Amino acid sequence: MQFDELTAVMRQLALQAGARIMEIYDGPDFEVRSKQDDSPVTEADEAADALISAGLRAAFPDIPLVTEEQADTHGQTLSTFLIVDPLDGTKEFVQRRGDFTVNIALVRDGVPVRGVVYAPAKRRLFYTLPDGRSVEETGPFGEKPGEVRAIGVNPTPDNRALMVVASKSHRDQATDDYIARYGVRDMTSAGSSLKFCLVATGEADLYPRVGRTMEWDTAAGDAVLRGAGGEVVRFDDHTPLTYGKTGFENPFFIAYAPGVLLQPQA
Image (cartoon, rainbow, N blue to C red; front, side, top):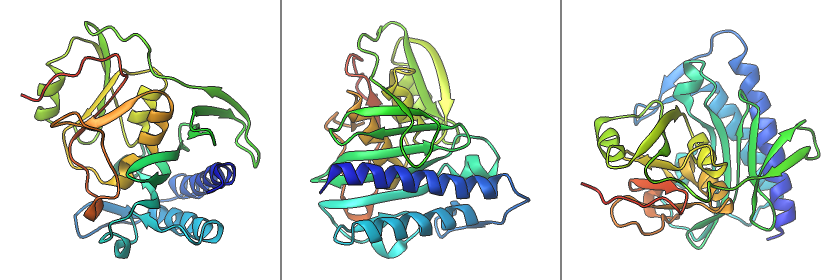
């Protein structure tokens, strides 16, 4: 795998998909349908999926590809694969909130080693460089990268006054009960994989997820966070979250800056 080429291709496809998503987002009303699991899907999900899938298959034909919108990929167990959520945060998209992202990642031996997260409505672009370090590109978002800044987790979080980020659309009592076990200075909410990126930049210290997610929801943000010095662990035993599981469903998890003293589940 040529990581230089991978980073460039993933970045460009995320930007192209984001542009197509925004065309639909800024246009007249769009149709919203329900999938078999009752989650929403729109033409933006499908258009972004088709664009990214075609680009990745052309560039990396020998690497298996898993996407949210292609159900025939979901019964596999894989070690090395590309994984895509073409529009993470469809509920935010439908409600015309800006917290949706394009997620593209490479997983190797259970670990997301490269990833890109693009929030087109917020004009925020995060990705891992070929050497695995994470950056935020500040634009302009052209064919070639614009200015980038290295990002890193908060190196000295104050465990008496943590900044916590939680889901905007999936907040529940179990999440609030767990957060209450910490000393919290302030809380913010965000949709999609932006929550990982807020921890990666030091804008938050802790993101617990006590709810259902799939690997395509988390892999790209997880890669960005790991490349920024953060960690993502299972909620139950605090072992690293792994990828390539049969069915691609995640357990509950915690994303955090390593200086945070994790609390056990109740």
